[in-house]
Image (tube, rainbow, N blue to C red; front, side, top):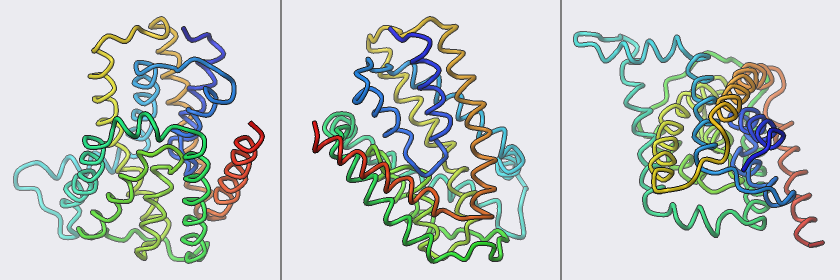
Length: 269
């Protein structure tokens, strides 16, 4: 059973790290590994993911309203924006396939500290390489993500099922390496979070119905959802501002420091 301290801390971790390129899954695994906390359970994950989902949908409500409006019969856009919804769907397909084929392996062997340490360092270095290709303060007008690049970004996203990779980190890294600017990379990454979080919530809910007991009362779970949602909304706004002014390098250094720290824990344990 979760206590209130564990509930608030884990909800804050989810909200703060879901959209930062530092891996929310790794940061949710670490307290259990380092502090010997009980696993928070699937139902808790459903609620905090629900909070982050609401946050990103509210923040990008204008974009989402436009994309969904393009589904109306007879609606067309000269800029091709009506196809972006389907490009987002295309980018989600690799993650669905990988999740269906390898979910048991990822949920088991891939959650160990050695894996998290490696992915934190390796994908942090890749993000650093991508960050060096982008000039901070450069032209930030939105670019249109092509069908091919949407699929490639989706392939990169599928790797983020492994803890430590970071879904936002690897998708932004892939978009930057494909030649897109920071504004386009971050926007596409955040919009791509909507179907992925929905898919994750559906999977976790289905699995929870198999018989896992609730880790906390409903009031505690709703509080976790609210904390995760508010912190996620604030994080999106702050992160986009940091990207425009400073770039990705602060997060690269954080990942490298965290990865080295994890290596130290492994060596000393």
